[in-house]
Length: 216
Image (cartoon, rainbow, N blue to C red; front, side):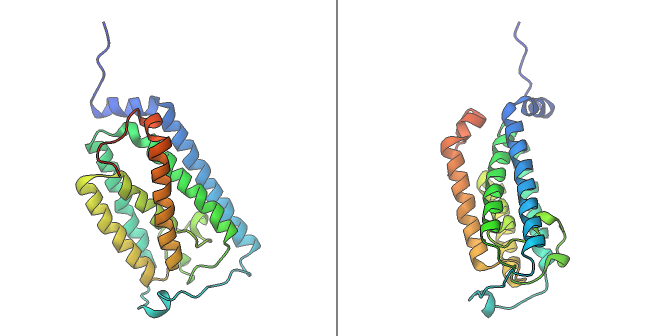
């Protein structure tokens, strides 16, 4: 007699933890975090006195507000809402896929902050909530924007709409607090979408067994 497949939350989480693709995603994400930390540490110790602030036409002509903590706050709902979306839509089988794409984006970020060693527009590190070496040094591209935009792309329906509001608020906070240059913000959106589209073509079916309905 076949064992009935469990569809409750506990059963779905167990199935997620039994999937090798969950661990593929988790391992890549951890590796990408280590690479970002090492890249930031390298710039902090080898180039901190050589990093230059570049001109930005938009930042140079808009209001400045000392609210660096806000873009750390606005990124939190993006991840919380994605988690709620996963639980609500019973999409735990997609977690490994999501983690893998987060990791891919952060690997791209690690590469570019090394190849483009420029200083952030302002020294706002001490005013941020999440003070980690991973985001201490390295402006291009923005980790905040890229990760939050991926959350937006992953979610659907009302969850995507609310994440979009949080995403826009975070981008505004980054602009007025001089957290990133304009090119960091828009390049992150492009890179994140490229990673998402790459995943949709080459990885989604392998990781999840199917293509999500209503996806871009």
